[in-house]
Amino acid sequence: MSVVIGWDIGGAHLKAARAEGGRVTTVAQYASPLRSGTERLLQAFAEAKRDLGGADRHVVTMTGELADIFSCRADGVERLADLAESELGGVLIYAGPVGYVAAKSARDYHTEIASANWHAEATLIARKREHALLIDLGSTTTDIVPIVRGKTVARGYTDAQRLAAGELVYTGMVRGFVMATADRTPFHGAWTPLVNENFATMADIHRILGALPPDVDLMPTADGRPKTIDASRARLARMLGADACDGNDENWMLVARWFAEAQLRSICDAASLVLSAGTLPSTTTIVAAGIGRLLVDEIARRFHCACIGFDELCDVAPEARIAACRCAPAVALAALASS
Image 1 (cartoon, rainbow, N blue to C red):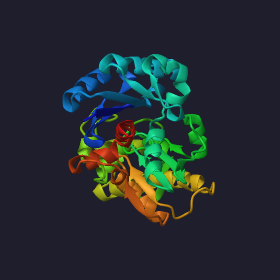
Image 2: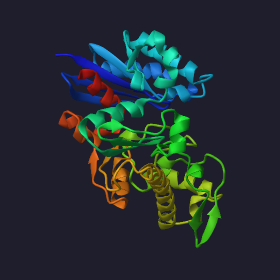
Image 3: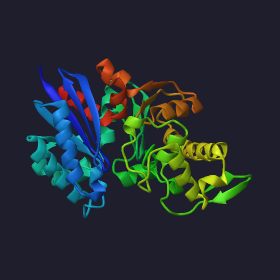
Image 4: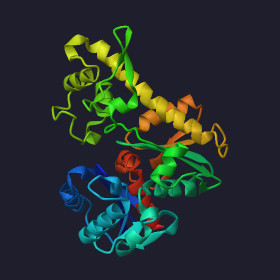
């Protein structure tokens, strides 16, 4: 029985999915912020190899090449491919429409390799659904990808192109900056402008709302203090130039709801732009993925669309389904390379 592990090297997390005979059996995610260097990524690889075991094939996609420790995306692609090769041996790097390339050739195909994890995910969905709109709401970004007649029909491919097309939105459940989500909030009956400092992240918002599962809350807080609701309220208050004692629990709950709504609106706006191209029926099925899968359910409701989880389209062991939905690109790679 062939064993394949799909790897997704992000700027903040390493994700891995093990498929045995085409069935995904184990999925895991590890904190590995690249901004501080590659040491934590090396540690994450060691933890993943311990947890997932060996494999006949290793296939790799990435988004971490955009991290500012690299001089440019080509440099990032090359260095991450070399690191994966040294850790796993004989890896194949996913290059979107080009297919798979050896790690030593990664720089030659850096445009196709860079941030192509969404393409692997959409390619697998296209094999399962005639028409669909993929919405993957992760820790940092949201991917919105149309699938028409069993093909991915995204208008953009690079990050820059996808941002312009509405197919990539820089907002996520954990790492998004509160100040990038809105520039003001209602508080005590008045519009209150925000402080342009990274005092709080969207993890604080969703933590206050009880919408952030602890097992995906892997990044440090903005101030290094605990991941508690009280500490999140204090961080959120600073965004208003205030202290937590300047409001009660209900006040801060309302502020958190405001920012969560602003985030949803930004994703809905982008989805409207994608749908406005007219390639999909307005009531197409939305395929939900990422740690914000439940928020995607709400987006689908607003668009009057049916919604299914990414894991429903894959052969996944029951105990791995939640993780498979959260780590969809790694799962997609493992499944594609097993077929």
